[in-house]
Amino acid sequence: MKIEHPACARCPYTSDERLCSTPLGKGLPSCPTPDTFLLEKAQIEFENQSIREFARQASIQEGEGYRNKSPRNTCPEPCKPRLLEIVEFAGKMSFEKLGLAFCTGLSREAKIVEGFLSEKGFEVVSVICKAGRILKEDIGVKDSEKIIPGTDESMCNPVFQAMVLNKAETEFNIMMGLCVGHDSLFLKYSDALCTVLAAKDRMSAHNPLAAVYTLESYYRYLKED
Ligand code: SF4
Image (cartoon, rainbow, N blue to C red; front, side):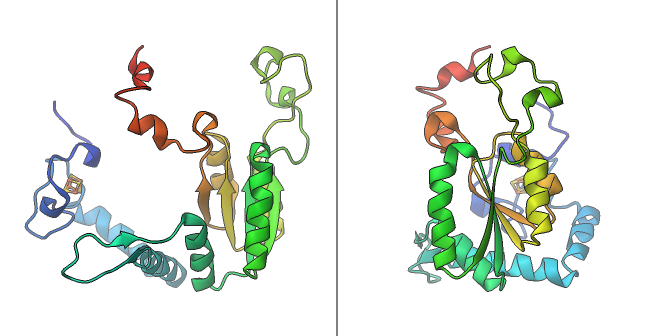
């Protein structure tokens, strides 16, 4: 198969052999690593002090996600859940006011997370996906396309969610269980940079990789037309 666009997901080399890992490494013909023009353009963004600091702290957080680190140990142990990483990263960035944009289906979990973050000393502004109570008909959804036809259903309103948090001037927004597509709009309209605590997956208790791990077994039917 001829691959013209970057296709890192198809790269046949081990992590150690890859051009993106080692100077004399190998890559696909379409490897993006030698694209120095684009790379320089990307690197210019890191001259912005706030982007540079965000990236620096994110990398430090990444490194702190492991213990038993040494040059001789090629298999350090992961040691932190994402919930703690978010708290630590927000602390590193000196953020005080956090946004929590959550799905109504995770209301119980949002209450727990809000309490946890508050106990850690953050001011938390939280907003549910249904806030604003706009009916789905307003955006052209037919009755038959609702979750329960024949009822009034409020639309998820990620644009409003983002605007509520923007108005509160949150410094960092945490997304929790927003639907596919709703999450995209939230990211588009949020003023603050965002992170995802949980990605919505109704079938797997919000573990989307469950379908990936079992794509050759229980979920193989997904591959059928
Ligand atoms: S070596 Fe190139 S093609 Fe392979 S994973 Fe790294 S960047 Fe992608």
